[in-house]
Image (cartoon, rainbow, N blue to C red):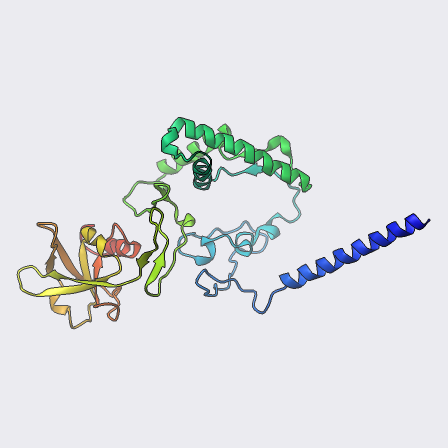
Length: 325
């Protein structure tokens, strides 16, 4: 009898501790003030407004021009889903994404930490085998955890994005979209990763607006590298002794300059519009001086060097004006 009382007392004590811990967690998780999300720079995100009529299939929005769709925000991604699916019987299909670039980065780091080797030391075939081995190990771990959590998935139809059936479907879809003109080739800027030596999609890049001089870590360098500092230099105007001074945070890109832009209403430069400047390092290269309201007259010198192969804004301006990119 005394033993049963003691056990009940222990259970009650455990329950009290658990309730106290649960209350403490709830208090810590409670919102303090505004629940509105912010960007990396601390700016508040605009309010999301769903355009899909209630109960209809979700209207997809472009990913490139909307800050709300560039990142994974559950409220935005899942909006309109539940009204559309409500009332239907569904099957929960378990599956894993291959996460190509992220997986490669993780496996390369593991290879270096364990063997002090790079993927180039192994060669393509051996490195691919290592990636598949890593995938098999962690795929099983993920599935085991989902089972332990009680997920009611139909494991008989488990999916992996690089299975033969999915790969065939991707090839077929790609070819169809290419034939219909939705997928096409053109010269476009890419985000080049200096660590992985490959291009990344816009969704895999975190853009950062610098307010001034900033020291940042760059792969391959022991010390932080300086960014956000304006450098000034002058381009000589063709056929005269005059020069036009430009300001840039990336002077090394001048080798790819194709034009100089000024504001059409800027009196300091109006007499230059339509003329050319001479590139100091590349014989015979003339850069036209163009006018566009895109230029901020109060930033730097008011004259902007344009490098379409480096800057997305310069590329857009180059496509909308008449000069060779």
